[in-house]
Image (cartoon, rainbow, N blue to C red; front, side, top):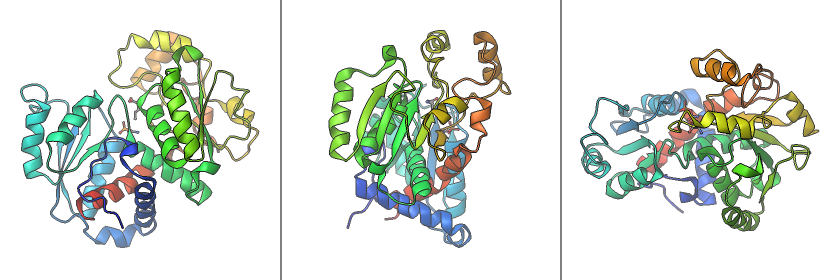
Length: 334
Ligand code: CP
Ligand code: NVA
């Protein structure tokens, strides 16, 4: 028997495969029995502080609703209006906050910062996204994949990640591959592929788990009969706006569109995106980028593909709630 009580989650590989499947099973239970579980106040009287140095909709709301449903109280600390990083170090903030809260969620920039936070905290610290990893997103992604196939044997699943293959989502997907044996193809221009030595290490570990990590520049190679196509924004939060020009230059041919989905020759292929997505010009940034770089139908994904029958994105986003519930209950209670 194992227990996740008092564990931190800074990256997905902090979990063993058994711990991961335990969390996913608990998430399924919370999802299935929404009303009954809601009445059980698993987190009664617990206090959770949510630190967000970057914007968020899904992660923040999922932590908040999980806390509301299960009886915990939360404090939200946004990028402004508190001392963290401005007048007080991460270390001192951890020393103080962990004396009065039962758990700390942190979304920030450098991964080093959350490591310092965890080192000096006497309560569990959960990573709500850093520049390097987004492990709570991956819990929802793996739950979504599991729901679609109804089993936890990820080594039977093949996923293509398209676009910015060096960002936090892609790194967490690679970790998922090492942990679960999920086979991942990285589809992008060679110029922005991760270092060869890093990929070789990933390949070895993934193969050990029954999967593989493969890279391709050509969307006609490797995506035949793929099960999932996953993409994310081409420039992540915290990165310089000046990077858009170069990224668009490198990645513009790697958009997820209906043609790419059809190229899989799998009618059951599904599309995943962590969200938010630039799929239309209905947002300030979306409009600006599309006008600047002459995209008509979306950026990393077309509007058509985003809302198509292939897309699981909103169910995937809903799964953030159940997986965060499962994580909070496990680290605070069991
Ligand atoms: N996927 C995700 O983390 O979304 P938010 O940035 O809205 O939290
Ligand atoms: N790569 C994106 C993920 C957002 C959930 C970012 O860091 O902005």
